[in-house]
Image (cartoon, rainbow, N blue to C red; front, side, top):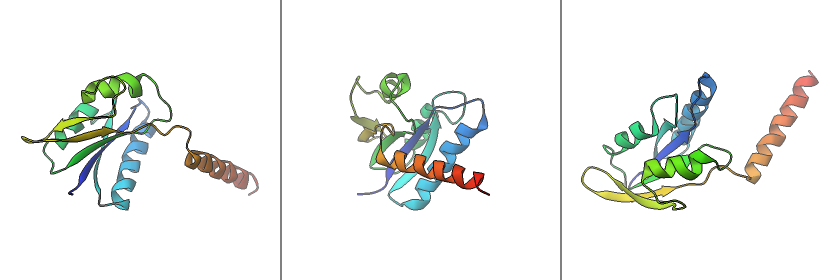
Length: 135
């Protein structure tokens, strides 16, 4: 199997931090693995948009597209807006994506949610804050 595409979806914000976080995370993922061709896309305010990146993926040589929302919890974007852009039925996690003349599988990942890794990160952040106080 060839490369998979990963569209890392961020919310977008007037402040620069959201865009930086999504773009930096996409770059870190790309450095960690050769399995994915990673592109960041945004729901609002920032560019490139999700729609623009979907168009960009149509020109790539990928065997599958995985859409990964960098959101903590389920909300309107996760449940309605993103699936609608992807052409998925409500509640569907799988579909198809048209590349140059061929169809490839499209899968829609869950948001971060209540993951033990998130708890570990919060413990790390708390420890870092306590360490700063003690310096």
